Figure 1 (tube, rainbow, N blue to C red):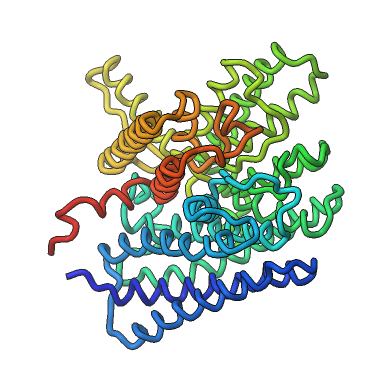
Figure 2: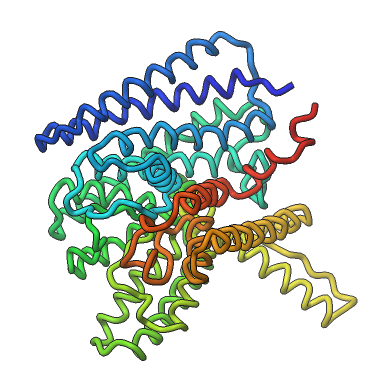
Length: 482
């Protein structure tokens, strides 16, 4: 029988932490003489009360967090956190509907970056800070989950990284706590460095902190309607490119570098593939832009690299409306939407390591056809790839694309046009942010969409962020049987 006590225990701690975090935007509102501070205090007290109640109720129980409990916990924490994180949005003077508030909170925690808020330039400062803080918390949670939980659950080939996490389900809580300390230190250091760089490039203190949080988290929430394009600063764009990439690299390799292995990053096969794919797509986008825009070549390359980095890493910042670059560019950006960054990072999408594994499978198959008597071993980072890893990756790719198709069809049936439905489904399940077209493109928002579409997109964000299997397994009847 499923034991809910460890689930409620962890969820209670997380909710109490989330409630305390709500006091930070309250202080921001007070500093700016905005009355919305009371909204954050009220929401924070309610969230802390419920979280502490759950923790006190379950803290003395002799409970073990097994595989089934870990699956339920991973999904339920994100849903419950989004529900409580939506309270400030619903109660603020923005007066968002329940669908809009939940969509915004889920977009924040999953570091998607899609927004329904119109008029960010004049929104309450506390709300703007809360959006950034949600993405920062979500980004850290995603890194810890990818390092300490998904390898144990063997989700979509993540067992490749199991040796770097832990060996048995019984160790999930203590091991996650141990790992998260090092990861949090790296995460804070990158955020602080990014904020300082933004400040030196011309952002004010609050904007620098908020954009640093959403850049390292590869979330993409901005305090400006025009996103990074508002600042019209090449220096800010280059800084953003650097830290978006930093957030998309495996955080365990940062830990290894600190521990005396500085070359671990460049020796990693996934990292090398990430840079190769990103540079190739950016150059192709640059050439495509050159056919549509009469800009200096250096300016066009910066715009292409910035926006391609933003989309491939799942950040979702925009400096220009790349939807105007023509159909080839649109196809390139849609491709980048699916690929994503590295495993064990704050990034999203299919993940580069799965692209590498897929390539190794194709190469092995091609060699066997060419040389039927030959023996060819698939390898990843110099280690043999087992058949169960390959099967898990291929299964993930199939389910990922199947979820994309189902979501696209569902959005079309609601009444969305084809480009909005397809790009909306892609950006939701890949946790990127902007879609394509005049409605949800880089220059638009998701506000005009019907509530049903927003609920579906929020579900797509959750499924994509939790690597598909983690959510879908809960709908298998056998999972609930002993």
